[in-house]
Image (cartoon, rainbow, N blue to C red; front, top):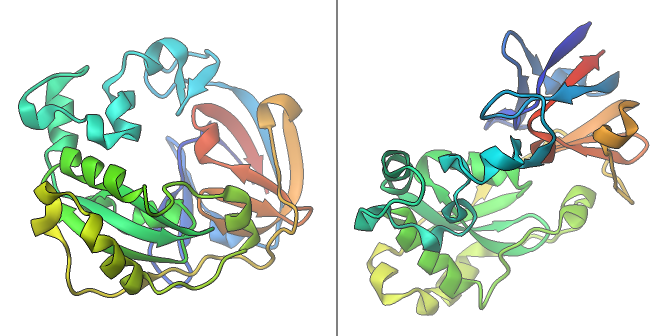
Length: 263
């Protein structure tokens, strides 16, 4: 069976284990059902997620021109402390920025390769943790807008990491941590403007990924260079497909690429 479409990040369902779906315009694949099967991935062309043109992807699924112009890739996406919609100030598209920024946001701790602090919209819990390959996570602050979440993250990342080591995450090279102890320790560093939003009492969320075999030395597939790859799927974690030969394919970093997948 063959499927073809433009890659966007896999949709997920929080269950035990996590369910993954690769969604195309006219079809979708439940990737969990492909575990243990040999599949081929073939590069077809580019398709910018904004303009739809066959132009080389620059970042996040967009060609260079669209990346620097579309509202979905403003600097405040990666650096939420730069959000200004709460002040009525436009970056690229104020209406879009109000819709995204002026809603409840969560500052959280997650453990994937190490304990890290992060920010996400409340509606993206636990999706954000799944995408990062975290096996445990805990909300620590819930604020009414993205700006407050951003300044809280900036304050806390002086005391805890804010990045995931993707190789350690894929090797499952991590240890269980007491995130409640981390939360209570970090409370003292939360900025005054966000202190009232601290979450005093909650429990960790634990996530189980569909992986039969973790790679010892993961090697990243560059489908744009290799054009075609064939391998046996043995796991899915974060937004990565894991193959028996220890090749890993990051769906998220290949958004905007049209591929043909054969099973």
